[in-house]
Image (cartoon, rainbow, N blue to C red):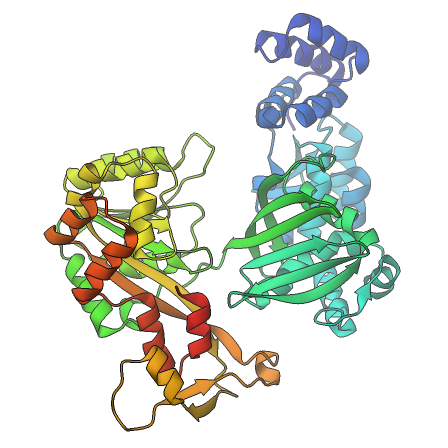
Length: 569
């Protein structure tokens, strides 16, 4: 351990550094010293709570005063074999957690790395040399709960919850029932358990919705919300507070919406989630959206995503262009990121430099340079685009265009000979063009470079175990199909079985449309005609809509007519 200054000297140095670094004015610092009686650690915790954006700066400043390193535990991946060198009881009692092992020495985070007595005790427990670094007490408490939860305690809790059949029932889970089933730490483990069940069921959203007497937990599965758990309202405050703590949000702020991210420990992987709250008349509603896991998903090829020959040929034809912009459009839940990576997979080859920018990275694609750019930080998507171009990217991809600056940079890239593939949030290919213009780019700048729009929607897929064949009625044929023949039209409908939870559906099927821009279409768009007029014109030229593609997939038995009508315009 470092032979840095003693704790008393460090306290004084910390307060002086707050002034010299411009973090506090001298008078404010004097008030703070008086308030905490020169206790720098207490003052640090106070400042971090009120200046969360300066947390790293403040903690590093204190660690420098102690002569040790500061470790941000919420950005640290723990090795189970190292963590368990310290029993959980000791970790909780002394607020200490093993971080990593370098050579024979185990590095441990503690709020007081100057405590020689603690260092000696930990050396005995570990059975070898130790090195102490600084972390905030609250960070250590969270890290201990998360790291040790990855072991048997979490698995035991999940088994208890599963065997109690509290999920997927109408029974209301009370605090007493939860404690009886899973023990005193149940409220700490419950959020992890909810997320694990959501991931197991491939849920894209988890809604936690308070009512007058109960809290309903619903999962969005295959695009449809399904109730999975009912909690007594007395559990609501503790559950939301726990989630806020994991997301580094203000637990006391209940009347304003908040959003953040949570890095969740699971038994054999880690999951990253968006977390947001919304005040309602019965309390805070919460939304969890799993966005990435350490096990990155496999990228499907264009032949594997049920593209019709019409859409495949038009898309591949557009991708032969040496430069320009192809938009990948989709509504939330349409899995447009997966579609974008399928397009990139088609483009990847050893002779070109492909760079894909994401936040977060959900897929792993061999042959592409994958860059993670974080919104709100110094290296954001704008910086990532600029640096990728400096790095000679020939094909440049952005997961989603959200800002005017991003759109203009991508246009400039296309103008200078790059092929750009960019996601955009829109319901269909026509709305994608409107959305691009809404971001602030001008039609005369965009249209000469716009190769086309490849749009994707999703419909629920029929359960292969219980789907039921039937002959379409004349009314159905007249309404949905251009069919004048006499042969019967065979369709399938949902029935329901134990395998699909009686819903009749299991998974989703992708629906596509490909809008290719030629000179006549560019002229039509530049005239600022209505979207409906544009749609009518391109249909006459052979455009096949997402609904048309859906009806073809209903004829092939993948889904139902009703599902296509529900999900497409």
